[in-house]
Length: 233
Image 1: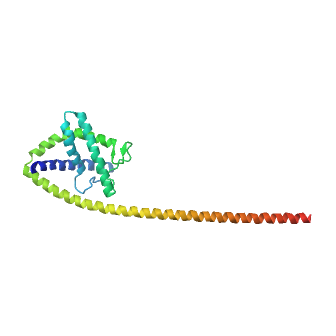
Image 2: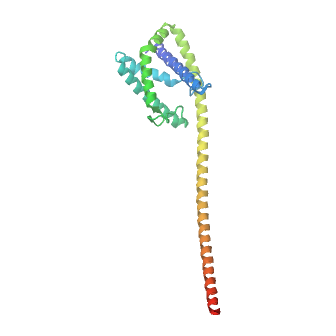
Image 3: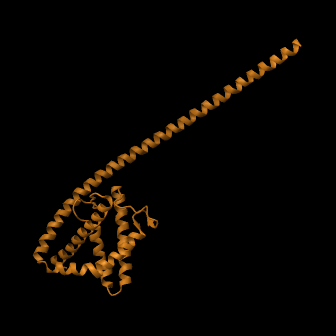
């Protein structure tokens, strides 16, 4: 693969990353009634969509004559990508960038049946509607323009990723500190609870002992009173 062909694939990756960012940001912003940047990075790109498009090109596009296989292959491949991406980002940054825990059929909050079905429909949309006109459009662009554009976007995205990564790691450090503080607080509360339980037990035992002593003294006094009364009679 020569440099130009590599840059063409980079162009596909960047195009679909931006397309995915526009789609998700628009959808979520409408639902939240405010602007929400759905990307891990600051710029207008969601690399998971670019990666998903690359996967569609590899596993779904060759099956164009078989729509059912396009759906199944695209759904399976994109779901696997989404699961491992979500798990990796959670382990590294201690943050969920999406969460399907409220869905009935889901796995660890990273994937769910509904999202997988959407990925499958996305593969059909990609193969039969979207990719062909996008491919024709990109093929009409001057090769030199593609080379320059991909170089500039690569520089911007690399810088954006570095800045976003640093922020995410700072956030991770802050979350770890909060987690450690919460653990220490929980341990301290546990110790206080044990101390209070021990003190309450000692107080209860002491109260019981005093009650028994008082009761014994009262019984003794009553016996003495009965004895004195009997003698007088």
